Image (cartoon, rainbow, N blue to C red; front, side, top):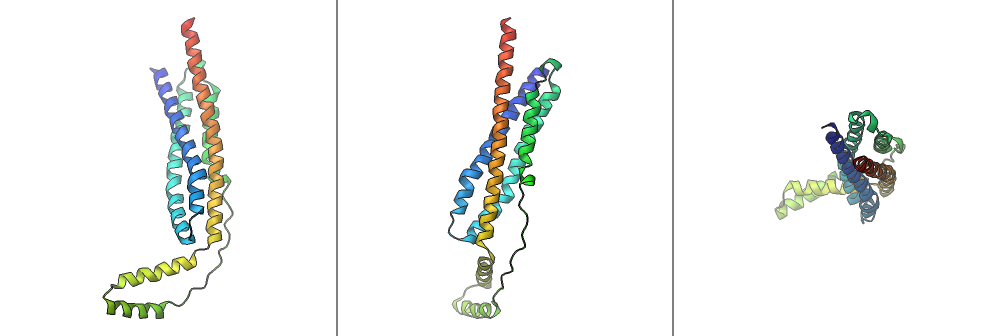
Length: 199
């Protein structure tokens, strides 16, 4: 019964580690280069903000599941089957989750961009929209959209994206190394079981 639990944990750990490797690889080679090719800095900034708030949740979940599975598999294994690759894989997967902390860029002071006085424009636009029958909400949305376009600095957005991409490349390398180690370790476990059965 214990060996079945250990096998299940190894399988879950390997699958989640494969998903982690694939996700970080996709983020670093497909998603970020696509965002860097967007024509406007404001749309790239909005897309990157959405990506950078959602992706860490999935990366952290896969890292936690994988490292916990391998560590529990090591703890529950019988003494004769406590293979060190389970611990090494746990350490590598856990370190891949720490790349965000180790490679975090230093926060620079942002340059303040002087805002234009849009109050006069807003009043004129409100008056013209009332004549046309448009609502005040449309004019507020247009004014706020203009302000966000002016506040976005394209160089800062590009720098943040490139830093994120470097961290994902580091995660891909570490997770890929752990995935290869887990596959070889599971294959070795299966080969050892075959040898025992043949004897």
